[in-house]
Image (cartoon, rainbow, N blue to C red; front, side, top):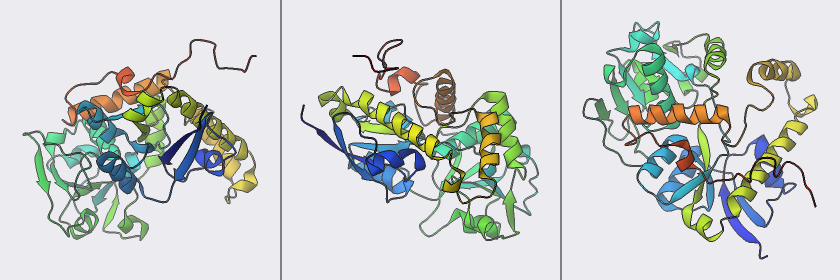
Length: 328
């Protein structure tokens, strides 16, 4: 069989190291791995330009793409997950001490449809009673996929040159929801702080209650690629799984990570999250995770319906009991 040559864009993660180094190779596939770009650039280049055969891609934008019939599909590989309670930042003088205090406030975001922001809006709405219509939204950047905000939203597109982080420090915004740690926090600026100062404990309680370690990204594929090579999604999924297993094995050596108490931390995390926090496939936990994200996306008006999970991913199953060990 002729080898299939694919371009694959993703982050430079330990769980894809074996694929990058070529110690794990998808059966029948030669990968050109592209890892030297930030997430926002990768997502834009994939969805707007279709530059890659496969790419790690924003879950929120992927849901929007499928809802709009864009020519992309995905396999259930989730390279990026992150708890999000620690990414609500507030102006220290805004009078905000608890989530309900956000009602009536001015909240800035880089983009409205960013997956992290979708999760945070959903959590605020469903877990803390802060509806998205209870606040004023200020959006800094152009969205990856065009959409019309719901009429009941208080929604302002900021002019070029405005930066939500600087606006938060200056008091022009009361809060910012962000996908990353913002510069003022990293610089120790006392004019801003986290809403949840004990975010680690809040996030642990969230997982113990819900079982959700929020999925941020999926592995998107061009539909024409899958149409021409229907065997490729399964082989890619198996390769990603093998690469992840290699990462877990490598991390058993505490010398790999330059942290004094790394193994102690790892053991504490595994006691909470289990032995495979980055599990792939449509497992029961992943289905709940994805269904919650779909619900939040629909609540935000980003998608027109709650899309069944099965519609979003290529069928990479081979029947019960098959594929678990090689038999000749």
